[in-house]
Length: 291
Image (cartoon, rainbow, N blue to C red; front, side, top):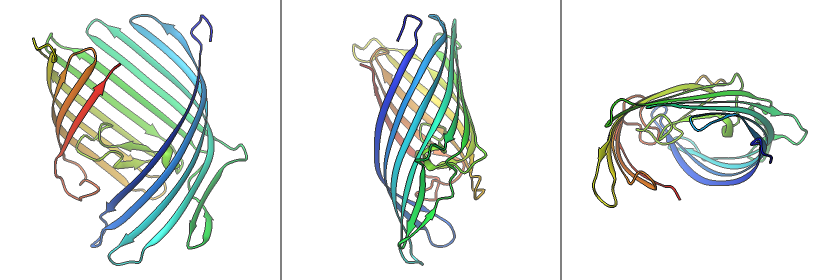
C-alpha cells in the first residue's frame, strides 16, 4: 500500500468435503459420515517491522468470518441411524507475528497468532436432530493461542537436520474449524490427516536428511531422510486425548529450483489409526511444484 511495505490482504475460500470415519469404541465401531460446506472470508493488514535479506519480522491483524453447514449420519451395528444438521456462523479477530532469521548454515523461524471470537450479533451455533433444534456447545466467544517454531541447520555439505514444534492452547470448547489437528504432514506422518483433534495440544518433529548431488538433467539432487514425530491433543469438553507418534523413511527427488517428488513409508507407533484401529504403515506420495 505504500513504500514502507504495508500490505492489505483480502481472501475468500470455499471448502466442500464428504468424509466417512470409523471410531472404535467398545465392541461395535461407530460409523460417522460427514458432508461439510464451509466459506471463509478474511480482511487484514501486514507490516514489516524488520525486512532484510537474512532476516525479517512481520506483524499483522485481520478480521475473519466463517459460514459452515454440516450434515452428519451416525450409525453402528447395534443402534439405529441418526442424522444431525449443524449450522455455524461467527466472526473473529486475529493478531499474528512471523520472525525469520538466516545465519550461515542455520535458519530460525517463529510464527505466533492469537485469535478471539467476536459477538457482532450475527453468530449462530445450532444443531438439528429429529426435527428438534438446540444450541451447540461450542464457544463462539473463544480465545486461542498458536505458536510454531522451526530450526534448520546444515551440519555438512551433505547432512541437514530440521526440527519443528507446535504449541496450541485454548480454555474453550472450540468450533471444529478452529481446533488443532495433528496427523499426516502436520505432526503424524503415519496417520491420516487431522486424526488428533482438540482444543489444546503440542507436537514436535525432527528430520535428518542426506543430500546427494546428481548429474542428471532432470534430477539435480537425491535426498533420503528419516523423520521422528509426536503429537498430543486434548478436548476440553469431554477430556478425550490423542497421542500420536510415528517413524518415517522417505526419498525426495528434486531439481532444487522448481519441483520435488517424494516417496515415503511411515509407521505409526502411538495410538492406532482411526479408520482401521491398527498400526498398519502408511505410504505417501508427495509432489510439489513452484511456478
